[in-house]
Image 1 (tube, rainbow, N blue to C red):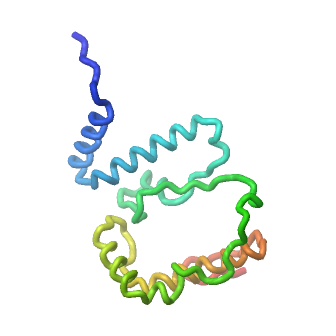
Image 2: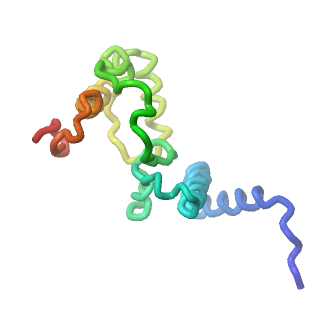
Length: 164
């Protein structure tokens, strides 16, 4: 006895992944996103472009830990290419999204507070006006070094500023 071919393979796949998410008591959208990312990574790994990208970020952490480390379901890749192609210089002034003005904006604070309960990520729950200065103090030395064409910032001891 032969099975009838599937008429709607995408719907079947979605149904199976949804069922798997329910059984594991996981967020369906995260399962679907993870599947799409893994499928993309497989296709990239067998393509002629595989040597141009390095997988970075928190995606590999799911191999070792059941709790996601990220608030977003995106994929981070480091691409190799010609740095001159960028065509602009790295910022030397603090970016608006890292500024005290942004951190103190009531609209941004409301969005941040609304975002926190929706995430399943194990992360700090500090107010936006505490998170932004921490991020800025970490990133701005990187931006300034890139603008000055430095190749190294020295060492970064966790929880402390950049140093030698």
